[in-house]
Image 1 (cartoon, rainbow, N blue to C red):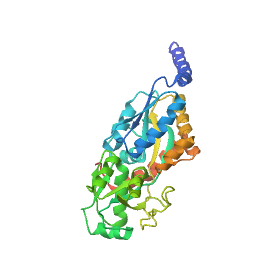
Image 2 (cartoon, helix red, strand yellow):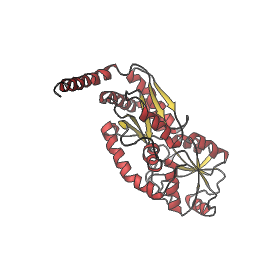
Image 3 (cartoon, rainbow, N blue to C red):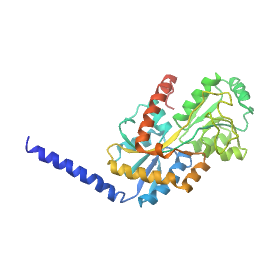
Amino acid sequence: MLRIIPAVLATATIAEITGPAAAQSFPSRPVTMIVPFSAGGPTDTIARIVGERMSQSLGQSVIVENVAGAGGTIAAARVARAAPDGYTLDVATWSTHIVSPAIYRLPYDVQKDFGPVAMLTQTPLLLVAKKAVPANDPKQLVAWLKGHPDGVLLGAAGGTDQVAGFLLQQQTGTRLQIVPYRGLALAMQDLLAGRIDFLFDQPSDALPQIRSGNIKVFAVTASSHLAVAPDIATADEAGLPGLHITPWHSLWVPKGTPQAVAAKLGAAAMAALADPIVRKRLADIGQDVVAPERQTAAALAGFYKSETEKWWPIIKAAGIKAE
């Protein structure tokens, strides 16, 4: 036993040395940022804006790779299995890391297999409809929904939309049919074509179509107005006071990634979020950059814990099933 102790101590010493050393040389090749939805959607746009600026700080390219499907769980599983060396980043969303774990049987533990890097942005959703929907205000909308039980199609690109749809039905006493999509960009295409009736979409997708008059908007899923569109009614003003959902985006790495490496990634992300150009680009698509004190890995870990404690009981009690 005594002969083993020096080996253990030596191993510990090597780990202490290689941790900071690895961070000093990191990254020596491109970093891959895994986006859990198809290209062109809000999450993809955010990742590309932030990743482009992070590459300046890191001195290496940040490559965005879209891995869509199964409510974002395919992408998350890939990150969970990746080498814990900092070269694979998970773009986690409220949908993929709060809703999906509550409704899917996963091949990974969302609370144990990832390490926090940085909190990025948050924004409420917009309840939008195809132009042909005859309702022009929330009161007319509810009446129309009640007159079409089980005949109204709601697009859903992930668990967030399913939860929003459940809350809408709960608030209005109506029933909707959920149509699953691999990304919000695809759902928006079908909304524009009139193949679905409604969509809970992020401002980056919805606002250009609203301003062009291609779709209708009924409310924002929050108690306060969007800074980029203050004329859109809040959920409270629309008579839907319980319809409050504010999805968020954050960065994670596989568990076991050296702390110094994760910290370097976090610093690059925070530098990106402090850049006025990045902030404007994100604001232009309706994304609110969270305050600096909320961007840190420690703050993200605490926030994630509070979100799971709040939402998992609601989602499970709702009986929402994987689509």
